[in-house]
Image (tube, rainbow, N blue to C red; front, side):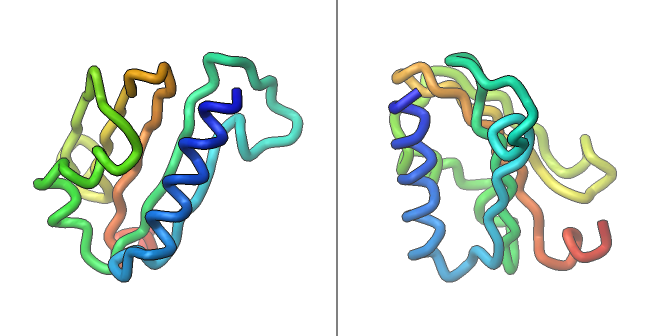
Amino acid sequence: MKVREEKLKSIIEWSEKNADIRILLLTSSLANPFAPVDEFSDLDIEFIFENNTNYISDKSWILNFGNPIAMIEEDESCFDNKHAMKMVLYEDGVKADFKLYSKSNFIEE
């Protein structure tokens, strides 16, 4: 679990330095004190960007958190044009699901 905690810390630190990010949310089992958590629990992260367009089209920011070995990408059309999704498995075994909202879409939802 330490590897997952270190990954979360690096995501938070990157977010704090990124002027495009307005809000970072940790959701799902890791945010719920009553949910069971094990070594397979993933990071469910919601980024709220001033404008998420560059983060949807350019995947290089994902490398800030490690070396991805697999990734599934879904654009906004998969979610009623509300957000995009990048599900990433890193070589250290940590899986992160990144929801990418624009601020305006997040406020509407």
